[in-house]
Image 1 (cartoon, rainbow, N blue to C red):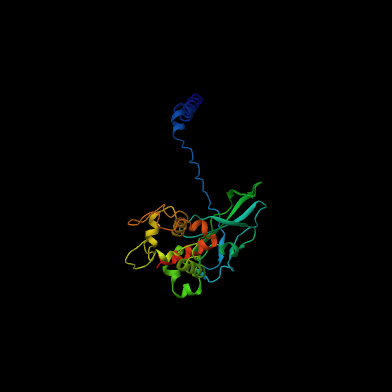
Image 2 (tube, rainbow, N blue to C red):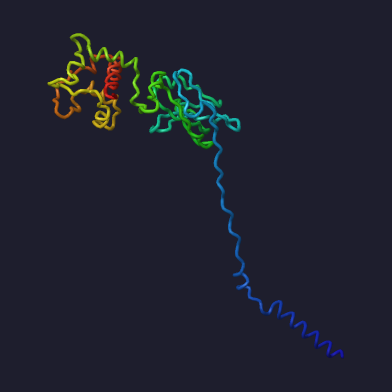
Length: 277
């Protein structure tokens, strides 16, 4: 009886050894283990300032009282600023000032921009001024705020719906153009001939082309220049671009040196008003 029990015990031990070790294959077991995939890195968008005022599409009749306002969720660090960006549609979104508060009075800057449509946004940045006073932006703390629009037009322009139909660069400074009209039509006595003496609309014999309604033509003559820049360049260098069918040397050659910068600016604005018709 003892021998039978001993024999059964040996059989059970053999079976256990076979089950636990004899048939194992370390290499196959290792192959079945799949390492867990690394979790994807999630890049969170930086929060952006929330624009408050002016409301989108606001029209101002006076550029002397334009203030931009926004909200931001945390105080700025010592080396952080709000980069306030204002630009015309089609231009680069250039920063015009840095501020610490959540508002910026841009009236002084706008007074030099003239009439038209503008876009604006705000971004919190890490920045400093270098030894020469030049601004250097190192990093952006926030995302860009939503882009908002506003416009600056006279009441007359708004009444005529020019803010809806005219491109910003064709809007005319009426007061400046009125001063230019006098110089354009009358010149300065014998020192400077009038522009009208050659640019005569509907004349039988033309010494110079009519300028009325020629905005697009002027824009194509030198694509590197705006229309106003082209007109001013023509006063300084009258023979640089001579329209087809006309001749060099006919136009008065010293407008650029005889007239003051203010007089030239006025004539350019009035000429632009003719071209924009």
